[in-house]
Image (cartoon, rainbow over all chains, first blue to last red; front, side, top):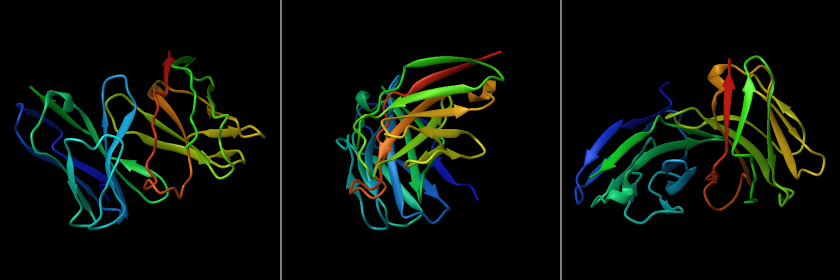
Length: 109
Length: 113
């Protein structure tokens, strides 16, 4: 039981490039989330999903898209990366409480 | 969700109890108090939650005042590995925002030898 895993752990992008962050959970949870965390700040919700095939916007959704084609996977996409998207991205899944992944560190130059 | 107020930082000597306060004076009757912590560079970790009764688990104890306007997280015997940022979050488990958590800035706890 790996819990919540995130791929990749670290990535450097140039402005305008695109990429997809993968979150996978093996706990059969319905709810999944993507957060970002900037230095000295708490986590802010980007998008979330309440089940396979559903997604919804969180607090800071602009510049990101998500998909939940399979229950165990929640993908976060950046179509055209900007330096303001440099951050640490955390994925979480939930039953009664939220379980977080180890994070993906993204640097956009 | 109700707003929470936590001190930005606290120190605690190793082996002593760490008492982390949280003020949530606008909490409503059906909102729970959750505590998470984030050790440097890692994903947040669930610690404990409660509604109005005091709660205890293998990690910590949660003391909620009778009027529910404040709470205290207690780490009974702090270790160096408890150095982390601790987040107090108040929310309704069945809200329409998908149960998402509203993280503030938390309390940075430093446990010293």
